[in-house]
Length: 209
Image (cartoon, rainbow, N blue to C red; front, side, top):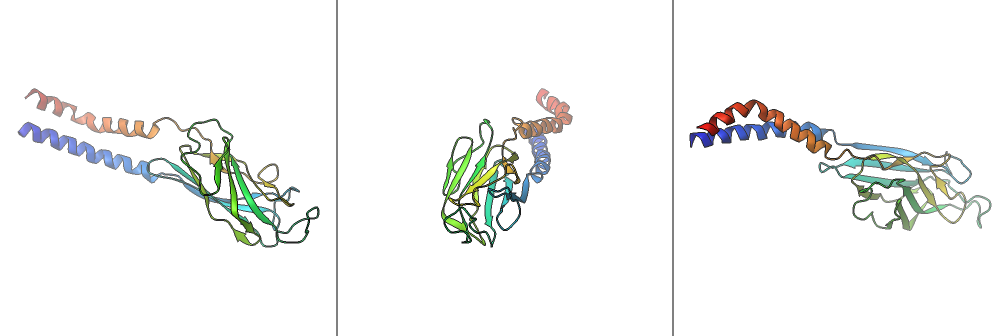
């Protein structure tokens, strides 16, 4: 019984220290946000015709990344000459992000309502177009992959549509950075081994008795 208690105390101490080791890893989870500009069809990347995209990338404790984008259509965004009604307020009715990657795990599950997997990205068709001076609901999806910078575009049937990251706009975060396989699990495993290392002699003594 004394031997069993000794093993239990050693194992409990190792588990406790392993928990302390894991906590700093979780404290460093990615949580980033920002704003990027999509230039209009004429290459203008400033209001009122350019769109802005508010974005965020949040990593969960299970190392799943949630990507979120909100389309902001500035007040004063109007149809340009060449459309049927120049000077009238413009709307945005679709939004697309390009992954530019063949890496597995770029999309996990389904994107938010209105979103469709197009193989190398996602396109959302907005049932309620974003009118000038308003913003869309958050357009979201989840991925196994960390972010890199990629292109986005938005459109309607009339100029100043389409709007785009390339060549005059700004890129947005998309999945594309390859994850090092099991890097965190490996770190925890190695940490656990190092924690147990000082107890190896004690385990041997208990096992011999």
